[in-house]
Amino acid sequence: MEQRELFLQSDAALRSVIDRITPEQLTLPAPAEWTSRENPTIRDILAAHARDEAWVGDVLAGRTIEEVGDRFNGDLLGADPIASYDRLNDAATAAVLQDLDPAAIVHLQYGDYPLAEYLQHTSIYRAFQAWSIANFLGQEYALPAPLVDLLWEQILPQVDDWRQYGVFPAEVEVPADADKETRLLGKTGFWKPSRSAD
View: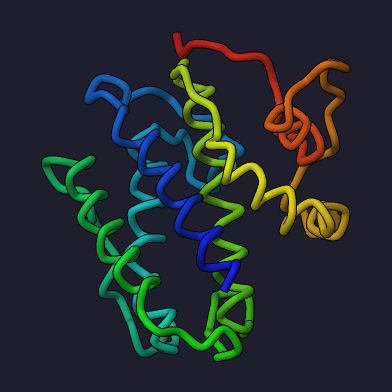
């Protein structure tokens, strides 16, 4: 299942960025467009990703929001946010590596979808957040080439449809001699010159 590989690579990319976040950076203000929470910090963004990871196993098992209830409400990060996220990431990876039926219907907050589509949806979120967080924090980071290839194959053919749903911003012009990663980021509206967090 190609969507499984896309998920695993996107998830690993996000983890590689999160694992480099320092305790001091957790308190930095985060871009408001990353969340509906008021005055978000990087820790708030990490908490949202932790919750997203926590849900993976139950979603893949076909459970509904009502069946899961409030199990993932509250603080999932505790005193060691990065280690807590990593544990949830490990559990999500294990769930995705199980024998899955790509056509099975899973239940999401915004509707019911085939499992393969869910993996693709969450891959988009993870991959581009990996790049956005790294860029915002001034990390030296590039999306891995195999992941860029998968995103190019699976996402770009539908990029205009995704844009109509508000997933991607408008396309951004990139330098004429840009590499494939930069062209991907331009077409999905995420590219911007590297910057360091102040």
